[in-house]
Image 1 (cartoon, helix red, strand yellow):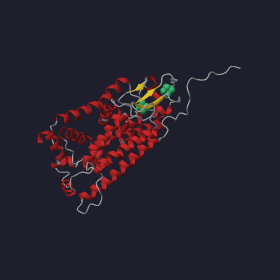
Image 2: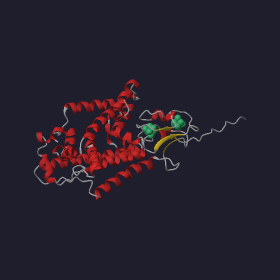
Image 3: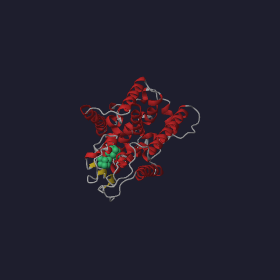
Image 4: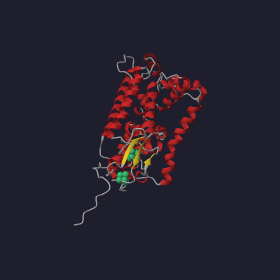
Length: 351
Ligand code: SF4
Ligand code: SF4
């Protein structure tokens, strides 16, 4: 009787594409935490705008939504050693995101960013609703992917040209002190135009995977640039790969995983969706140079991304680099003028 030849590879139980896993739990936890901080901040602002006592603490974590101020703060710090006392947590969060992406690819986007999580939930919902997502044709996709770098380039050009004095003047302006409240009002006092743009983004995200992250997010573009020097990358063993193509099909960033020995793209978010669906053992793995042959599991990567965040916040809190130094009295005084022309974005001529 003829015996079937033993395959030269070892099969393993692959996960179903996009099966809910530890990374999705991690994203959900960060999203819920962000939402809770937003609600706490909302009630803090309500109290601070009134005349009574303020019993709710301002959650410093909301400064994660002030990346431009954080970027200015980092430039000032690197130039002068001065740490922004107005929104110091913004610098901590940007520093954390950059560190994670420098070491672990763009894992900040794939694991931590709440906007990235919402983007992902939307295209998965779209997939359920329409049975598929769509890819834009190359002639449109490639230039659109450059858009986020153009937006990032614009902000970097403006900020890198600013002198230390100009940055200091911006950070001390009432507008910057209340930039967290302005961000809150962006959602709670939404204009028709904002609502229209957000609706457009939601609709586009249902059809095109990660529409916001892929084409428009300057924060992600910056993280992608950091990730280019990361020692961590998805590696494919061409000798055991059976060319099933599952990895390429599942990649949320449409990277040609099955066709490359390793993925060094600035788009790779370290989501591990590709490695999870690979049906052959030891064939597709996320590895870091310098860490031997051990691949990253979902649990280990999640623990690293989470623990680095907790360590960064803890270190910043105990060293006095987390909470704003603006006294509550001063904050409340400026808050009363939030709708006045004194609290508008300072132009460079004012500096
Ligand atoms: S290459 Fe793999 S880890 Fe990177 S984004 Fe695509 S699916 Fe995720
Ligand atoms: S590396 Fe990709 S193409 Fe090769 S076996 Fe694994 S999933 Fe299939």
